[in-house]
Length: 145
Length: 179
Image (tube, rainbow over all chains, first blue to last red; front, side, top):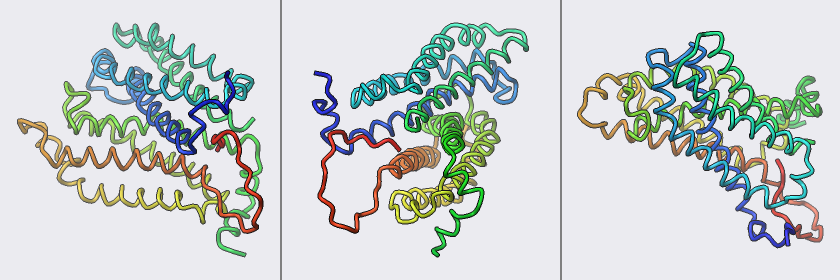
């Protein structure tokens, strides 16, 4: 039932690369908008706005990027579930992704909206960046291990 | 020896190609730059189109993102050059690679066309009652250019040189070819 051959996704050579392109554009929007808030929390960019203003303005776009990800990602997964499921890099990626999403909508969001003293806000920004870069690492290494 | 062959035979590029770790790390850095700084480009375009960050002025968005887009662009290009040159022989016959390079040239053309009238006159755009058509055109064309570059970049990995020998075609079950 879950055979890769039975998945209509694998009927055309173009579908998978198209999904990948959507996936990449999606994470550019998702991670890019989060990074803008992180740059502000670090005090290295967008200093004419507060992090709360930026977080509020960019929130819908972050969510849009996330929706693109959660649409294209599982479809890509379905093209060859066994390969992904057993891939160590994929497993690490999923764990990091879960932590990154939870972190983004809890601690990161609270600090961005309510503000925090510099050591804490900078730490939150660094953790956020590292988590998302970690997710990208995990994604790339799926093809290399 | 072809030019491509001699480029990729340079010592450190050979090592880079053959390394199990360095090659994917450079690729990840390339992709991380796309995520962080490519995101800035997309959001700037969206602002010019009037779709995002509308409560921030165009001057603020263009001005404050500029330095980061430049830094990101440099890192991204450096990583891209490393990725392409260490496998120069695979890249030179690849049509998607040349499509991507042509689109990057168009990014330069885009900058030459719109720098003065849009990116360096943001205060004028902010004063206008509505976003001027030229700013929207700049945003829309930049958006299309970058999304195409990103797609061509991904498709590079899918192209295979035509087989010289007539091997019996084996149809694989999955169309999915990693990298």
